[in-house]
Length: 149
Image (cartoon, rainbow, N blue to C red; front, side, top):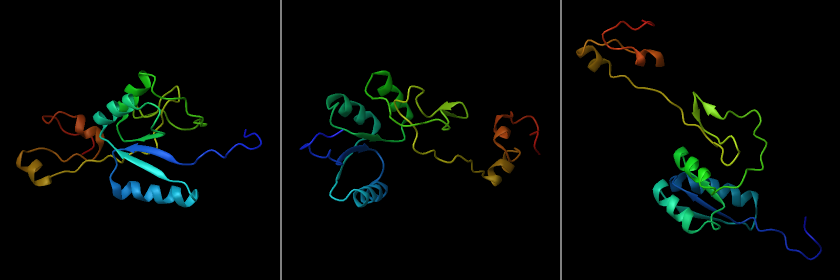
């Protein structure tokens, strides 16, 4: 709550990310359009470099945006995050058993990449292997017949 004479809090944001400029510039432009007069300062760091920077400058970065779930888990374990003031009910904490968000709401996934596999049919044929058609086929030893074929 602002008292009489208090200034409106700044909407300027410092974002640390490892994402490419082509993507980040779109987010930056959208934020600045939604918040006229606000600016985003972007700090590019890879995960290993980000850890050191965040430890050396703990109060400078507002948003850490990266696909490195392990880095988030390490930072949360070290007490580097504040609890997110977001209702996360209905959002999965895991995908296929892999944790993507912190149960204590210290970080949350904002995206999930698609997964798939590509098959070199000629190479499989040369090696006498069956072509997988489902994820479970990848768990079957090559000497046995795939259950889905």
